[in-house]
Image (cartoon, rainbow over all chains, first blue to last red; front, side, top):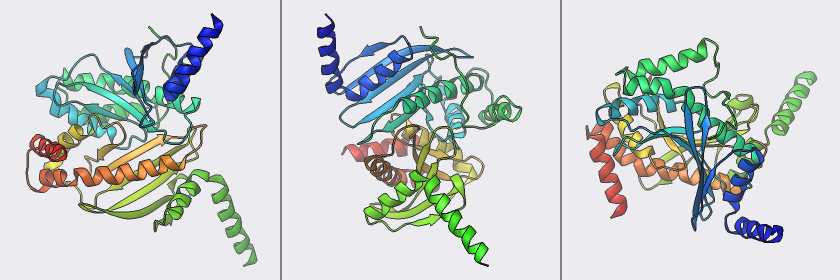
Length: 188
Length: 176
């Protein structure tokens, strides 16, 4: 039984080397996740508790292009009449963001925060995965309340953004790109 | 005087030794025959600049490394010369939001403060190594993207074109 398992694992590692690096990291950090295998692109999903909500984390590997993607997608869609305001909010939020960015589909209002990397001929390391996961979850968590105030509270995007920046200035975070803490491993 | 020379030599040596990612990107430009300039402002403020001609213009390209942070990072970006006028910044925000969606690697940034517009690819090296293929991928994609979206951006900024229309026309041109 162990031999069969090992063989399967080796085959999978050969077929999906980047994806297997991702699953190794999630296994090593004891995260619960679901995996979805495809011929070229495979992805896994996990739910993570952060301060302001439970965010869905998706990580995907494109073996042919040697790209990896990490993103968190919100369950709600931005209503059509607030998409321009959200576009302004995201543009303000993205400015100066060193790693990762918010994106929105103007077609249906889907919103997510995205971190990606071209691995090319390099080697994907645990530290790189650590950082990407941390960045995605913390950015989503940090901007969520302000984003909701723009969408559902009719708040001015510039004002909402200033409040997020203001939180940093008052000491909860001093650097727009700082690492913050999420409930690592509190997965569902 | 000899003391001053000595300090300078030590300083240069220390900069090189402490900034392997920066040196590696510079070496990549050299190895690939790119003319570039080093701007040594000190530490993580050091950056490289070069330019490259593409279909729609000659674009400036910059590279910088974060080697004094917990996660070692590399940044590549191209910045347009012009600033978006205040009355077109919301339209450009819509255009770049449309462009950024589904863009798996890299994204447009605009400062609402002064209208600076740039396209970025950045990633974390952390405990890994920076591969030449990653530098090539980032450089090529930054230049490709700024060139690809430039006509649409100009239509929105200076032609007063609706951002959705400009973005749709650009995508349709690519598909044709």
